[in-house]
Image 1 (cartoon, rainbow, N blue to C red):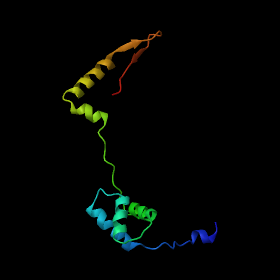
Image 2 (cartoon, rainbow, N blue to C red):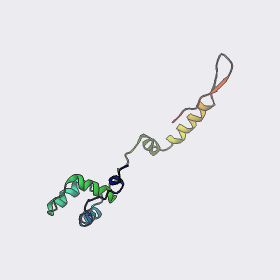
Image 3 (tube, one colour):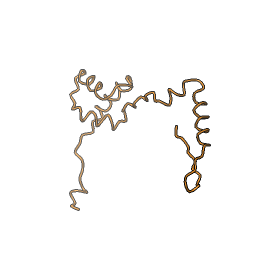
Image 4 (cartoon, rainbow, N blue to C red):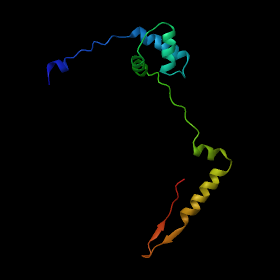
Length: 112
C-alpha cells in the first residue's frame, strides 16, 4: 500500500456553523426532511449544495422516521372478538390430521 493512501488527511471543512444552522430549524420542525430545511436555509441566504446538506443531515442524525401504516393485522385486531375467532379456528385446523398411503400422520398448522 502506498504511504500516501494511509497518510491521507481530509481537506474537508468543518462546517460547524452550517451544522448549527441546520439543527435549529430541525429542532423546531421535527417532521421536516432535508428538502424543506434546504429551502428554509436558502431563504435565510445560506447557499449550500443539497448533496452536502443531505450528508450533514444524515451525520447529525436528523432523519425523520417513517410513520408506520395501518397493516392488515391491526385492522383485524380492531374488530371485537375476531382475534379469538381466528385463534380458535387455527387450533381447530391444527388438530385435524390426514393420513397418507404409508399411514404416517401429518399435522397441518395454518399460519395467520
